[in-house]
Image (cartoon, one colour):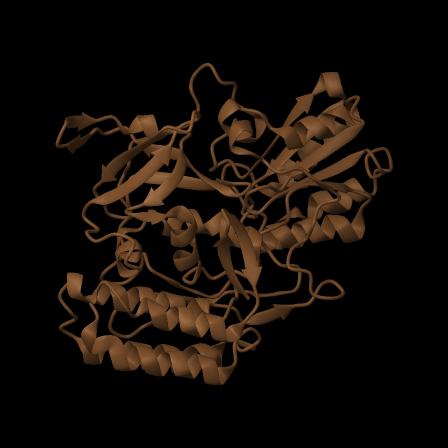
Length: 436
């Protein structure tokens, strides 16, 4: 399944051969703007190692593309390597792995001896549009003097270089390992701030000067130019949340707080955010779960909300203690008493836990389709390419959990978060639950 943009929105087009043709087209352009590689045989060794090892280690790599089409793409890249710069070859390898359309199988472009950098700006897709959600607080320098990048906060992305964001999205989507529309929307922002990728795709003539065009709330366009920084650089971020805008509950704690809860007494509700399936050293989950269940039992709680939005996974077994306890409490485990919130960031073990609630409880699901696909490959392992030292992540097991082959786990009530919601501090999903 090839996932692209069309008419300003994300759409899906199913065709294995389209992926191959897109990949081959990416071999064009950019080569004359940078010096070609000085180590073609090392890259060819990496390519052949990848093309041999990935199909052997993956449980069933050719469900979305045929082995012949995959090998055809390998051969074309092998022939082109001597004419390409190093970063274009790296981008091609990323695209080659993405042809499998397994969201758990990808080539990490931030790893290896030549990790890709980033521009100090962050994007996120809300509905069908791409917005700026964070930017560096350090000023830039232009021909007109110092630049305050904070002006871009909350703006819609219109163009990258001279290319409309729709066309840019079509190109970049070929490099994203995704199984569905939701996960593409979740992941594509990190690709669109990567200078080596944008230059390799011929979106920017000079990756040292990342030119972006934005539109403010009134539709007025303006442009800014960014210099790349190391991927692991300590960027002094400014986020698109003015002090006068309230912080919604789901963004009120640091991302490093993997699980926490809050009592909403006026609604006789407990809100429980579970944003990563990982134990916290400061409070083991078993102790946390016991505390949470004891609180529910000893207070006037009629409704529990479990927020799995933006949960990328980890160990799905950690939540079982809570799930077992809550399903035995008929006061909560009933229609209208238990709600689970999901979105395009609900992935891997986060998705597995959402399905646990579906199979084991009477929960109502609210939000957006999950980035994880119910029937999917997972249980990841890695290997390293011999010369570039880039890390390949790959699945080792097929999870077949539901009938048919739905592209996402869809909520009972669909409520999409819009850019206006996000920047005004609203959470329409939680608001709907509390109003019902």
